Image 1 (cartoon, rainbow, N blue to C red):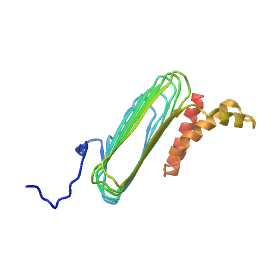
Image 2 (spheres, helix red, strand yellow; image 1 turned 135 degrees about the horizontal axis):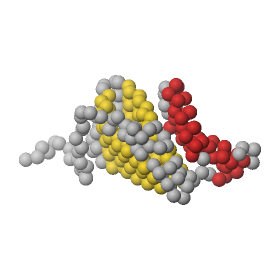
Image 3 (cartoon, rainbow, N blue to C red; image 1 turned 90 degrees about the vertical axis):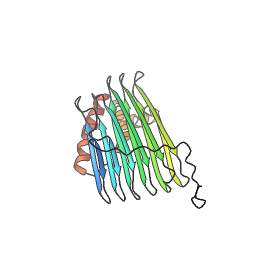
Image 4 (cartoon, helix red, strand yellow; image 1 turned 120 degrees about the horizontal axis):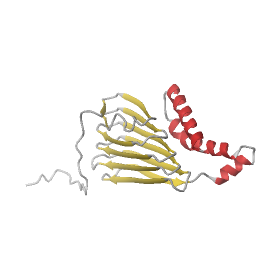
Length: 242
């Protein structure tokens, strides 16, 4: 006979996912802070060294992944929010200017309440390259007071370039703040006209637009030396794309 005092929870189509272990799993313990930036800038660097993140109580995790031109990259990252007060930030940049194939797949599992996740990925594709972003957020039935945000923004520079984006939310709790969004478009011609009317050459105007588009991800990097290094690498790559 069922316990009449136990509250009924409608779990809908929610399916529990086993928490991974072993190689490629980054575990951030109670109250710990972890910041990492992975730069994929050569054909030998096609997959980041981590595939899963486990964030425990009151931990803070900040991961940024940068894919530069010339790399066929596959980036799968699963996040498991396993302790109250955990905060995870995932961000990324991908620049494709030839025939590259780049894919990002992120899955963030909010397994308990009072956790915050934030995802921000911006990409630019030209030539005949293709990029894809699949981002999934799953909020478990008991994960009340969850905050989860996801953004994927893209720019196409050529007719042959392709970008596919698919943000997804699965929410099984009722006291949450969640949002997701994705955009794909071209450089703003009005902005270019404004800059050109003030003496900035067309090519330089395009470069400035692209740097401005990518900069929100770079500004998020805390280490000033690393931020400067990535800014220089990204600007160089962008100038070669125009």
